[in-house]
Length: 219
Image 1: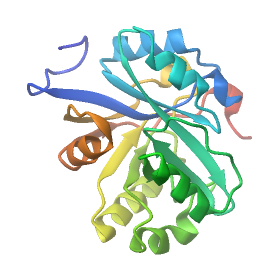
Image 2: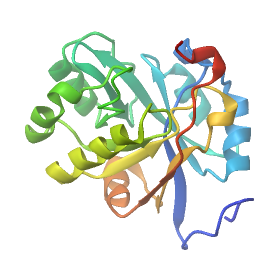
Image 3: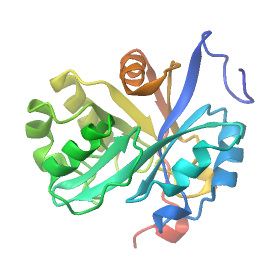
Image 4: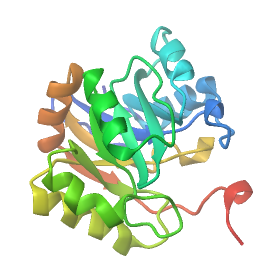
């Protein structure tokens, strides 16, 4: 479907924001209804709700007709940095050892991603990312995050994906309405984790860096 302000996609393709937060994260002002409205207005077809240490809002939203498809994820803090778990059915606790978090995501049939791995002001896994990817513990790398402090941080993440032959994603990391649509992937539509990874490997990243919402900007 063609949406305002966007060029038409190839038949069977969708625009996917792989990293968004709602009020359930505790540090976001974005309610699920506003998220859906903003996504539709921005031409986004699919949103992964990746709240911090919580999946209840995403699970509830997935059962509703909001005009945009909701997929369930979680951003999980570990002692070695944050990871994304996509296609989850149950919450994964925070501050568990990184190998345990990876194992719990995989046990649910989910996918493991590395968000903003090299952003120095947020909790990324950059120090262990190469080791983790080399050991097969990562399914995809977030190569474009709209809120990193420097474009070089995204470039380093993209290079990580290339080094290890992993597909790369993009996400707005939005915590407020205006952030929705700042970054996304144009990709073939998918059904489930395996289909997502295959489609992600054929997708194209779109995005622009966006200053943090005023409330969350560090001095």
